[in-house]
Length: 199
Image (cartoon, rainbow, N blue to C red; front, top):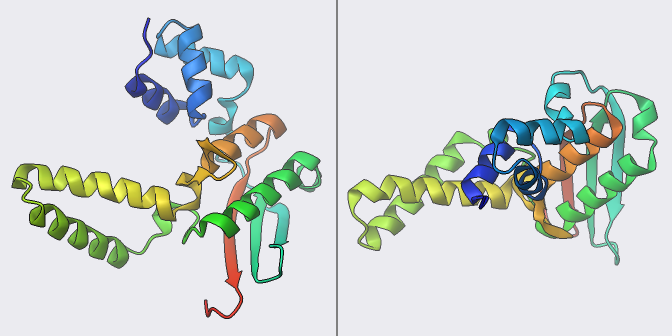
C-alpha cells in the first residue's frame, strides 16, 4: 500500500514522533493507523507523549560560544532527574540544540510564545500580499494560514528543521531523546547573543 504524506502527518500528530519513523511504522503496518501506533509503541518511540505531563525540574543551563567568540547561546533544558541531565545523550542534545540556535536564530521556543500582535501584523502583511497578487477572496484566508505555518517553522525553535538533519525538527529530536531516556524533557528557554547587538 502506498503511504501518503497525509497519513504520515496524521500519525505524527497522534504520536509526536518524527516523520521518517512514522513512515516506516506505516509501511510496516501496511497503512493501518492503529497498528502503526502499536509498532511505534513497541519501539518505545511513542512513549514520549505519555510522559509529557510529568514535572521536569532538573536539567542544565548549557552555554555554547561559536568559534571566534562573536556569537553565543545560553540554553536551559529540563529533565525529571539530575541523573539524566548528566548523561552523554542529554549533553549532546543540548550542544546540538545550542549550535542550531546559533545557526538558525529562532525567536521563541514554541509557537505559543509568539506575541498576538506580531502574528496579527504578519497576517496583515500576508493578506496584503495575497490581495496584491490578485488572489480570490475565498483563498486569501487559506494562503494566510499556510504562510503563518511557514512563519512558525522559521521562528519557533521546536518547529524548525534541524540544521544538521533537515528531515527532523527540533521537536522530533526532543521526542527521540525522551524515548531513549524515559523521562519528560523540556526546552525551557534560550538566549542568543551576537557581539555588538542589543537584545
